[in-house]
Length: 428
Image (cartoon, rainbow, N blue to C red; front, side):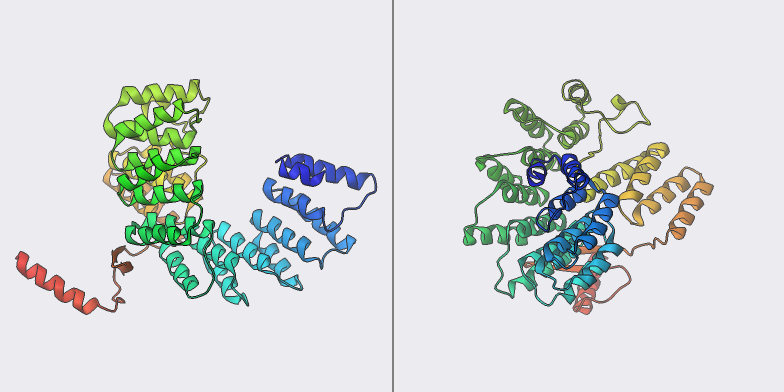
């Protein structure tokens, strides 16, 4: 019964059934306890999970590896990494699952350094452990490190799975590394892996973000089965490449084919309307968003009809942060201080980055609000946020070269300076 409720997604009923079992004097075993702990993990019910942990000791299952790994999952899912690490140290015989779950837990809270330490301590590296570390890097915007970890994986006899390829393609998309992305696409064909909707969607996203709309559209058109995520990625790809007309046409086709748009879809479509100056069309779509699909906008400080750009609420933290940064930058450019502060407040919750403080400070100074500018710089100092040096990267022959302002660590820096001096001389 517990398993049935869990698999059906009726998580609260899973916990209610467990409570009923305990009340009538029955005791769970090491087979049923993991189902209850997984329900706690999904529901983020740390206190309930902690109580069950106490029962695990009383029932004598504290040495059971399946119960131990599920407890580890529960604490990690609830972002209780101190408790998770203590439990991890107490597990008598750790399996690959133990290492994978702890790495993923640190990834979730953004602690990449601790995740890497755990990875390095693992006495063996299987597909799950390697995949969790690659995913950790990519989810926390360490895209170059994710690709480097994949290169280490290639030195082993372990083949990547779908999840690893999706993470790698996401890294290529964010870095604009089309050459590596194309190599991965060819590698997928050589391995003759089934082209699942998840893999195809990741490829479409990579090609679109690297500016190759033709290949992205060919993949999309060739998909036999599509889901809402795939439609959203293609519409967003058209929008970011300035093809608003086809983005809107694809949105209309999505509706005709019976797929329900969500807030991410509307964000992409309304952005397309904003970029192309189709304000009236944007307002029509905005009305359908509220009246037909019952999706309420989340910004409350302005009349929703006065702005077409809407922030998504169910996308990944990195994509949501990217959207809020774009809005913050736009608000700073136009002196919209109130909306800029709302965007900055949300960004503080999503990421720890000096850029938003610098943007806000510059905006206040340009509008003569020097006290506010000083307040922002003080907040930045109080929160221990250091100004990140400027950084740029370029891909040459499949390798990514990174340059950081003020550093001369690149092995060919002297040659680069000689070329730059020669160019400057020719320009003069």
